[in-house]
Length: 353
Image 1 (cartoon, rainbow, N blue to C red):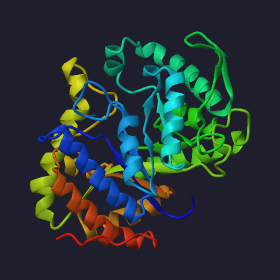
Image 2: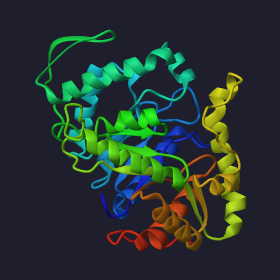
Image 3: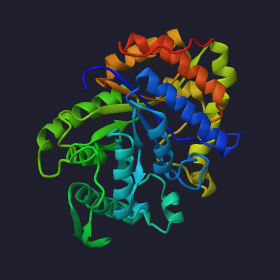
Image 4: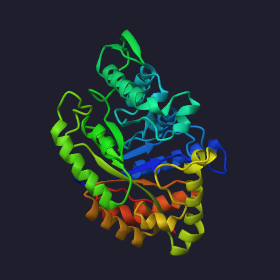
């Protein structure tokens, strides 16, 4: 992926309106992403928190498959310690077939020990469970019968009646923020996404490419069909009509996002390992969010692509306290006023005020 591409990341946070309207609103935005030429829609999986109203991402993505035609989509990530891998194999195959081969599979063990604990899974055991579950899933997607005997899972000659559209499997993705997670992704040839400022993204990208070159095509390669794994970075974004909107709409909405993402940690009187901030202006200074007019966003994105050596930017348009109309206006401004400067094939959108 040498050309610049844009994707979308979505927690599907709880809002003041009903769940029915929340889901309908997200599907409306998905149709816009699809028509505009975004590469992929990545949806998070979270449990027991207002941060995630799609705790079964496959169900939501099945609806997404039916209302879109071009955009790829997938979880970022499936929390593998919470799944029976045999059942997840079937879900993956169904989604890939329903979408005519547009599924992208993000996998992880989960960052919240509290969410895992609610399911009776120890965070200390989650790495081992994740590794074994991933091995089972890859084997099941590539085999006519599944046989596996491990510490956590055992399957004896299970017929794999379903298969994925993409062969040998849909592309796998992994979130990278540490040297250990970088090696886990690179050694398996997985596409990766990360957070952090452009300088950090550049450092991780350089190390990732070095390690991928060592392992690509080896026995652990989960994406043999992907010649060059994708490196992406996630950012919150709000494209405003004027700077007043940033203070009046985006800044209060970002504080609600902060409350949502830290809620479980605060409930248990602790803090997340990652340093989040409730201050949108501070988040912009930290180079993890963009908020401003289209002209300002253009400048910020231009600097990001120059400094990061990253060509895939994954943007979150609907977050925190933003209502449907605010998110839609931000999306429309991005599509009509920002995206065409970077992507020649971007489709026009109605121009937002």
